[in-house]
Image (tube, rainbow, N blue to C red):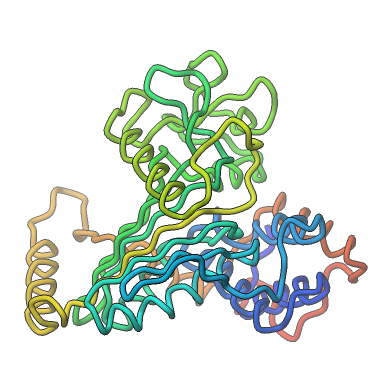
Length: 360
C-alpha cells in the first residue's frame, strides 16, 4: 500500500486536475479538500474521488470556469445554481456570500443545485467555526444515489443524505458530520477498492438479508445500505428522508427520484450559517460552549476508556498522525489513479518534488 505525504498527494492531485484542464485555482481548492479528507481519516471523501471527478469532467458532466449563478436572493437567503462546476469550488463561493449576510443579520441560509460532489461536509463546518459561525449543512444526491432502503424494504429509495453541525468554542470546534445511512457510500466504495468486507450492519442484499459484501452496491442484483441505527431504524431513515425533501425542494434541484440513474454525479445542498454575536452575544456563546464541552470531557470513564471523545476529536487525532506518518492509499485506489494518469497521457508513477515514501 503506497504511503504518501500530504504535500506529495497534493502535488499528485494538482497535476492530474491540471492535465484534465482544470484551472489552477479550482484545482487547488478541490485537491486540498480531498487531501484534507484523507488526513482526517475520511478516505471515502479523499483522493479516491479523483478518477471519478475527472471522468465526470471528461464526459462533460462537470464544467470548469463557471460562475455561481444566483437564482433568488434576499437579505438572508441565497439560492444558487452551481452550473455543474466542481462542488467544493461552488460551495465555498456560496459560503462566502452567506457569511456577509450572517454578519449583518445573525442568520443566513443558502442552497445549491446542479453542483458537483461537494465532499466532506465537516470541512465547511471547520471553515465556519474558524470565522466564529455555527453551521448546519446537509446534502442529497440530486435525485440519484438511491442506495438507502426504508425500514422493511429491499430496494434503495433515498440517497445517503449526510447532515453536519458545527459549533465554535474558544479552542477546538465541536463538529458532528454523519450520513443518515449506516455508512457513507464512499466508505463502502473504499472497502470495495480494498477488496475487504464491510462491517456488519451496513448492507443488505437484494432479498433484504444482511451482508458484508460491498459489491452488492455496484453489481446486479443490487443491495442497499440500511439507515443509521439498523435496518429497522425509523429515526435514521426519517432524518434522511427529511434532509432529502428539504435539500431537493428548497434548492430547485431534485429529491431522490426513479428517473435519475443510481450512480450520481453531484449534490443539492442546504447551508445555514448562524452568527452568535447577533443572538445572545459571542462572549456568552463561548462561555456556554466552553463550559459544556469541558463538563462532558470531565465525565468519569469506564474501564479501558482513556478519555471522553467529542465530535471532531477523531478527525483531529488522525490528522496529527497522518501528517507525521503519511497517508496510506489502498492498492485499488492507487490503480485507478494510475489508470486516470495514463488516460491523461501522463507518466506513471508521476515524478514528484515531495517524498512519496513512508519515511516522512
